[in-house]
Image (cartoon, rainbow, N blue to C red; front, side):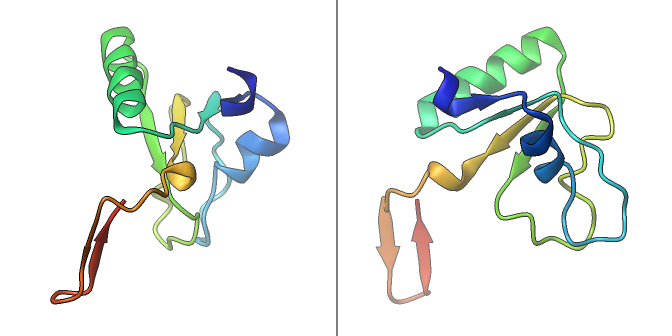
Length: 95
């Protein structure tokens, strides 16, 4: 629904670049899945329709990996914040 999907220019531009020197290449749409099942459904739909998928975490990368050079759907994973597993032994967290 609307709170989890945006085609607004400002939102798309925010998700179309990181901290690299590469110019902004915004996706066609930004979505905020909140569960693994939603990611799976969105990925299956994109695959079926041959639409590029671009994962987005925080936008702090230095390689231009979030630039949607062929458009597509940006999966902003920032709302997937429920901790599923915490390992103190190897300092890792699964969300």
